[in-house]
Length: 542
Image (cartoon, rainbow, N blue to C red; front, side, top):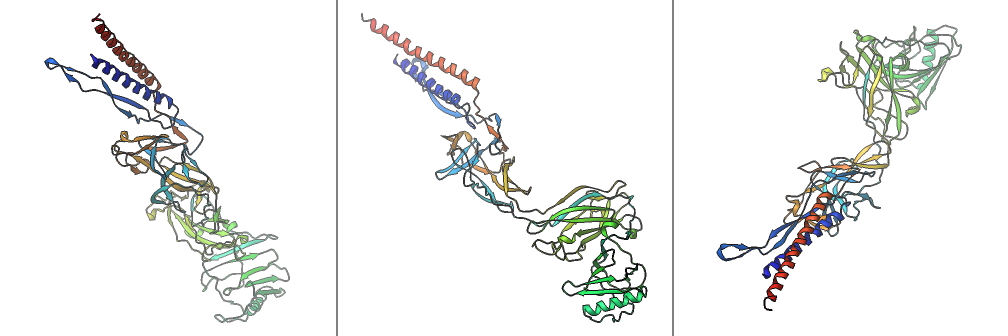
């Protein structure tokens, strides 16, 4: 008879424990990352009665089991609010050890460490200044240091050049002033042919060359014309002035000379400045002038950067080449304005040739020539800066010839233009992608990887032990933490600006509350009923 009393008491205790678990679940309905629990009961061993029958001795609380099902997601305004879509736990640490949590409300503290509301440090991999991740797990710290500038090394051009473009020439009009580029290769070398008084192959001073040029010009043109030829030793330039102002012509004879490249500044008063490196062939006849701006069919301004992050504008000119025969050959030139070069003169600094096939695809592109050895920008950056120009993969190189520049019968236009240089920038904001990569967005528009969060999974996550603050520790039952990147080895992905809500099902909890209450009431009746029976037994003596 007394066993029924203890059986009833065990039922009361078990249902009270169940109500405690239910109450804890309901209390944490708004706790981010909280995982609800349930109680599991087991019967107490029975005692044998006569005839082989058994009588149970009540109920025990077997265990409380945590339910790690996915909670609903809540969108927030903070990019550092993170939720895990799938399996895994955030890994956190402080001086007392390592913890795991599904709650992802992170922030940066005053030292730039990524911490949770309890000031535990989020764990992951840090990246170096180039954005390359290391392989050592540690506290994630975001530095506010600026991103260093990077010089432009490559320009990608996607464009179309009009197949109907005409081959253009330069018309020099009275009263106009032009900077004129004379381009025929990498060096300007020639001899004076008319009797200016110099012998080919002999070294002369700048003053002697000036006298020879004066004699040659006055002997070639009208006998009434006189010229002033001045040589500036500081700049190496000759200035030729027609004193009478008559119209004259000059022919540059390339026969027997090596290829050349220089820039002539030509104004309406017939003053020409010529670089003094090498000698010049001057003979009577017509002087044909050419400038990239006036002979090109199409031009594209491109902003590039030097090694200090200074921006510079170069212009790429595209000219249909009459020497191509089929009309499918174009020359291109990269020119930098005089105000932006260390020499102080407009210079051709890169050029090449593009050949198209009959379908308009790029058939081949020549290697790039750098007549001056590279780009020499003002501003103190590194000199002889080499910039590669990528017009796509030609058909001869195994490509389609249509992923960059093409030649179709439509207007010349740029469809895409990019370069890899940039100026210095300061950190503006950070973001976290689905793979846990923490990326910094800088004031110069660049994005760089700063760190990567890691997630932990377990052979038996139900074996984790809760230590409060929605934190867990690993145990023998859970097994050691299996660390890795989000999205790998069964680990979930990260959702930023999102928090995981508690996975408490309020309706189910209310039902469990009712059944636990009824169970408590029923077990209390066992006690009262047993008490009534015992009272009747006592009364039998009366």
